[in-house]
Image (cartoon, rainbow, N blue to C red; front, top):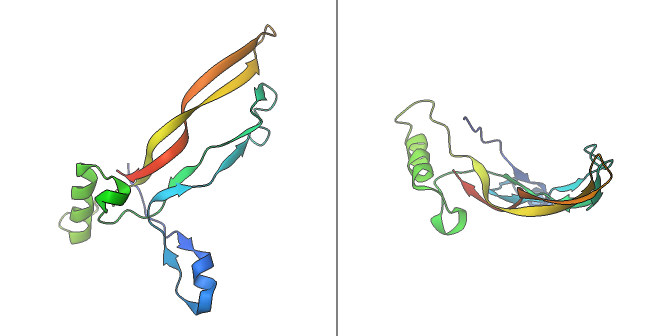
Length: 128
C-alpha cells in the first residue's frame, strides 16, 4: 500500500501575522458522522450520529514518544529520508487504537436489536 503525504496545512496559523502555513504531523482529526447523511437512518434508531474521527498528517522520522511508530515504520522512514531505495514511500498515518459503538436497530421482523460494532471510532493514530 502506498501512502502519499499530502501537506495538511494549519490555516489558522498561516493567517497569523503572515506566517507560513504549518504542516501538521500525524494525529486524530474530528469527524462526526450522522447516520442520515450516509443513508443509514432508516434502520439505525440510536444513536443518530457519532464521533468517528480519522487519522491524517505527515509521517517523517517519527518521535517514538508522540506517534508510537512500529519498528518497521521507523526503518522505512529512514530509508525514505536517505533515499537509498527509490520509490519507498513514507509510513502512513493510520488508526492505532479503536473503540466500539453500540447501535440499536430494528430487524426485518420488527425486533429491537442492540449490536456492538468493534473498531468503528478512532481513539489514537500512529505512523505505520
